Image (cartoon, rainbow, N blue to C red; front, top):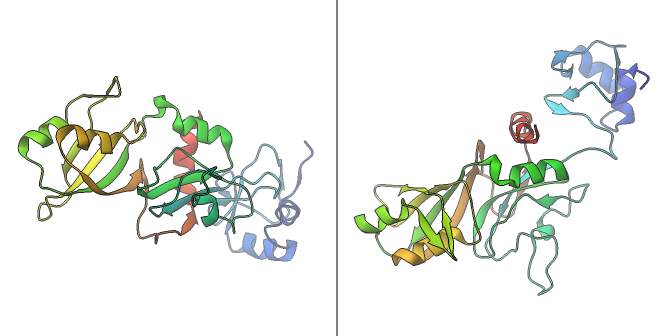
Length: 239
């Protein structure tokens, strides 16, 4: 593909005007393949990575979006629902592209839900070989015994399938009804079924991390775009 001047590329992508692009290039805020750009520099739109303050600039029609959403309880992690229930689609209507959940989080659970319009990345992240650790904080209705904690940390059979051992510990020594589950599989309602099998009832379940991506202080029902490092972390699973 024919190379074009970087400020024209940025303007064509709708990121900012050419004059604004030149100003940001002078400030050192624009990079090409990780190096500071120069005014008038020519780039290959298909081969070079142009970024502003660490965020890749892509043509509007091709721009990939990666977000994290703090899903509230009572929302299904789908873009539509035949039963008329509230969907996460209702929470991301202001995003200028149709994004889809990466994985699932059941109706009664809350917390971190990744979403994107990058189908290849979503498939790679959801594939079993990715083995991304997911971290949940789970409040149960009674204090687990030592035996129950030991059983939760062993292999278990759920619905005829033997799951891999999870790491289960007390999330807070002062609140022993609050547990931390770390797992790589995340089968349908796995944590609830694990607790049920050892005689514990789940009162609240919240996902707080997927690999290096943390929910942080994001308020319930809100979303924000992933930063450059988080996106690169996920993209590594496409390779």
